[in-house]
Length: 169
Ligand code: M6P
Ligand code: ZN
View (cartoon, rainbow, N blue to C red):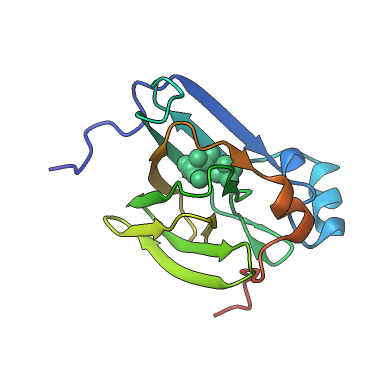
């Protein structure tokens, strides 16, 4: 029996993140420009389920993070803090395998494994980024309050303290 019968339907909004949307996030800017001179590949797609954007509701979004690398760095989601400092998030693996990087505003970093049926908890005040270290799609469901607000600027400015790269092992 499948844990979740249809993780992507019905969705209210689909967001497609391509490499051009993540230019300033990857470390190897030359690799970014090389790839973009030929193509603008999809890195991930987010299917948000339709709920009102209010605190008593929960966003539950399915993300499909495609496999691949930019230079030697594995594909990842942008990663963000929540503007609501007391709003946590749960990330549940559906398919594939990877890593969740968690970082608080003091710069403390944690790393968790994500795989099918694993749940990762991002506590209040912690940013979260998912990295696909496998060679197939990494699909996961995320659940958090519907009014959290996404702070990407802090991540663009400061980044995560760890990058996940392929060194062949
Ligand atoms: C998860 C959730 C979403 C998020 C998505 C993509 O599904 O955390 O809120 O939008 O991943 O991550 P990001 O917003 O960092 O690009
Ligand atoms: Zn979040």
